[in-house]
Length: 241
Image (cartoon, rainbow, N blue to C red):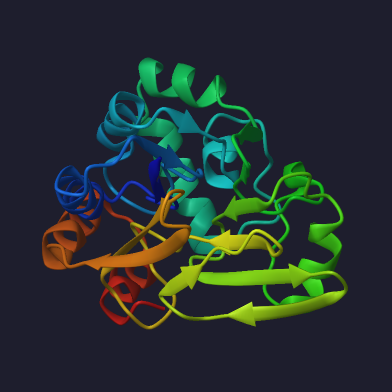
């Protein structure tokens, strides 16, 4: 099986469309979305509709949860709160209903899917480093866990009592090693590469690869400006931070 992993789209239709176009040429069996379809960006409804149409397995993200009122805004920064409040105003009933139906966790084959962490996924904590991963591996009941949330692609690995972090774009999957893999962000990368990011897992080849795709950043920035979204969110798309 070949799985395409997308996450943290954040209402960025241009980035999502570019990635879905790229995915069409990859002969994938399934598309998985790890949450945060909305928030920050100017096209929440269109992004939700595309994900609903194209992705078979989808989990809830913290911005999705906040947009439908399941999560309070107290832990969001000012810019994120402003974007969520705007999203609530423009989100249609179909998008609201779809986001409301999404689970926090899905287990398929040898994979556990969550947006944030395996340890208390409903608390929306971050998995930044190897020490964070140690606690999360205790909750992993499958060989692999796939996450988003930090917008930075990285893999955390465990073999017996040894833990380490891998920053490579290509990761070989060995049967004696367990993995928690962050697939990066489609719509707001934060690893200093502004290109849209997604991942592909090939179970037959036993490998995971990060893929980068350029998209029309200026076009989405123009939409954000017209919508009155915060300037900080507009400008950060160019820097990938």
